[in-house]
Length: 317
Image (cartoon, rainbow, N blue to C red; front, side, top):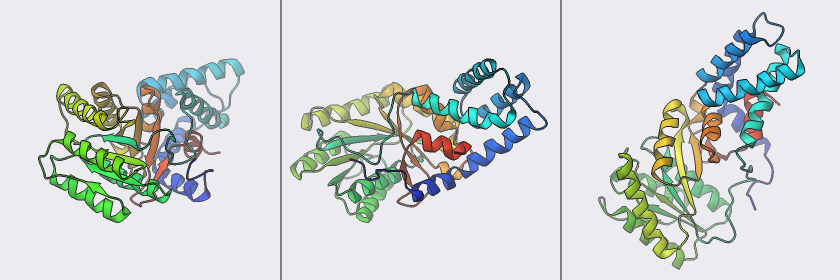
């Protein structure tokens, strides 16, 4: 059962505010593209293609969207530029729906997995530790018993930052001295969590940019050690991506999905960028559900990703 059974007015306002820069960017470009045109023709579609690509939707996803709109124009024979925004919204919403992932009602946990183990991956600077803290807050707010594991033992600042979040949220943290084996920290965290009847465990991992083999070996070792305590752990490997980096987020997604079995995404820092279109492209290209989006610095500003509300916020109801 989710914490939020509906998309509240407050959540909608936060989403609209967080995506305002992207919306303004897309609409200003779209307005210029259709200025003086009455119907959608090849020139308008060419301009629309440029709008989407420069909004960081990505080339492959943009071409899919343009093809869908071309089909619609061909079928309907005459489509006005006034209708273009509605069609664009509908086709993007349909594209995201084809990802075969359902929108969550809130921050949910499977009832048959306890503790539910989330291993968080991503490079330094994407908001990884902050996202962990905000996730812990949401689960704690739902009455869940949460444990944090500071397995990024290569940076003292990472352990310290996670420790600050554990105090702020009021959840226990398991940590070792700097330079300790990350797998050892994960092992201790799961043991403690299991002994204390935890509902959810969130494990931070090092955010260094490894070569692919080094990254794969390290993450595989952490996963294998977890399985000694909880055989099917980790249940979720959550990749954190910084939405403000645009196409660089695509590259990071490629690296991490090649190195480990990522099955969930969180896209952060969308409030400070006009590159929110990256969420559409990443969701489409990687077929991995975007579960969370970060829309601000506040502890409540991490939201469950709702495809319909996201598209409505960008292109209007």
